[in-house]
Image (cartoon, rainbow, N blue to C red; front, side, top):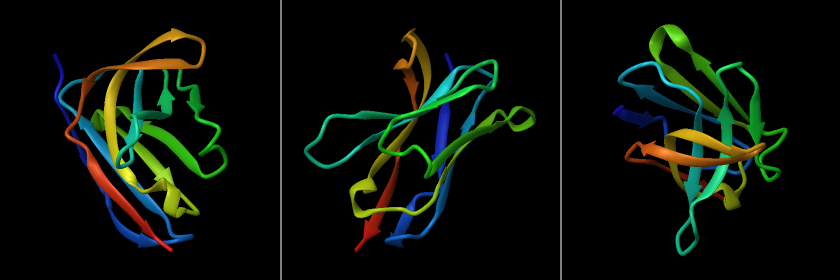
Length: 118
């Protein structure tokens, strides 16, 4: 089992940037980020594999970057040019890649709120 703790959410204006962090209780990969907007299903955002290769949803490509710091057992989500439609609770998770580009979460963090005002 692994514990995950997210941080870094907040309220920002359109076009701003935020960096989310997710600290794991032990080293584990692959890992990823998901988000859930009010009244919507949870959706995949980005993942980083053992090889350091990454995969991102089309809706965030070119704006969000997932990365990791192995020494800290931490992954990050750098979110740039934020839009109101990015408003959601963001969850960190350990993931399984069921098929290329399709990730499912296994262990989850508690989530961190990101709100983008227009």
